[in-house]
Amino acid sequence: YEERTVEEETTFADLPARMAPIVARWNFEPMLDSFWREVMTQAKRTPLLGERFAAARRALERRWGCVQHEVPMSRVCQTKAFAWFACSILAELPSFHANYNEMVRAYRQEHGIRSRSHPVPDLAASGDWLEAPFWAWRKGQTRRGKLFVRRSPGSWELRVGAENWPTLPNDRFDHAVEAWRELEARGYKIRSRALTTTMFARLFLADVFIHGIGGGIYDELTDRLIERTFAIPAPGFLVLSATLLLPLPRFP
Image (cartoon, rainbow, N blue to C red; front, side, top):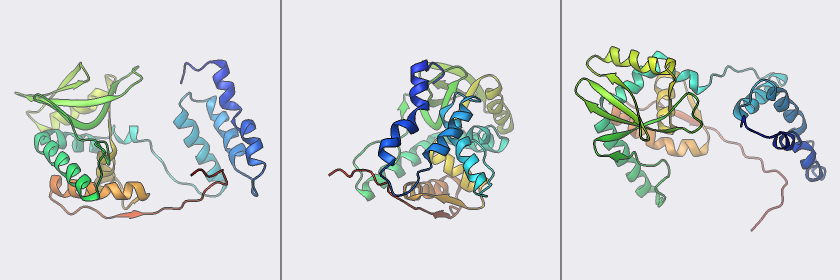
């Protein structure tokens, strides 16, 4: 996104003007204009599209008296608690890997899902390298990759794609946790994926976790994974949804 041309940035800024002929026929006033003004204000602060949208949304919510605390998952994934959670998965990765794939395949069969990528893809294996359920990349890289782990005497070897990463000691769990946390300072970034995000949030972060319908359906799978991995009942979660359709043309 940082490489956008002037023409592309102008097109981005002009979205409300290009939408005007469409929304003029609606019987209510859309919030696009006010929201987009906030988005463009945030564009002066950050080139990241997600941050622009999130900051603009928060600005509008504050005007409505809705003030809530938010933290990016990148910050959550840098906590010591998350490092303990992630290293506990690495410590039992062969069994976690097998359980994960077994439950995903059973879920697909129960729900008649043919796609190999839904609700989540299987964790891959390449010889004695096992895919761990985390995204990873180095500072300066623009694409994330899947984290693969191989256990060797005294350490866990890490790689992303064909690139070898620093190893983590596995002789003592607290040493592994500290080494995991040091990766961030060295420019190696590791983040949770769909199921590990909700696993961590439900077990260690939230008093109660609230899903939309889509997430609520796939988190039936997370329930089973929590119970098999940690041998405890999965914490409950809520499902909340509201859908309002815009008056756009409908297509068969």
